[in-house]
Image 1: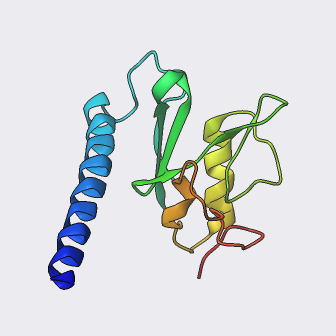
Image 2: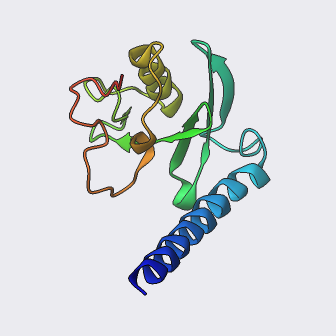
Length: 133
């Protein structure tokens, strides 16, 4: 009986995660490749061999993706932006912050946790530079 309950709970969890992430990605896809012509945070380009995409998310806050994976952007007190990948220097725009993260990543893959808002784990995995091998 416990195996059945475990399988049911695991399946329910998988469905919930799929529904949540599928809905979030669907909303991004519906907005189009750059969030619209009047979007102040819109960009869609190849940089450093990676596709970077930015647009305004909920509340007008910038949202960024690197190769389709979300990259968390944080606003600094000076008005600039940093990411968990390159949080040592404040960049003037979300685009500059995403480019700095791509420069720091090099050929390393972006961690799935680099876009985690409110995750209980360290989004850099404990690495001082945020790069995961």
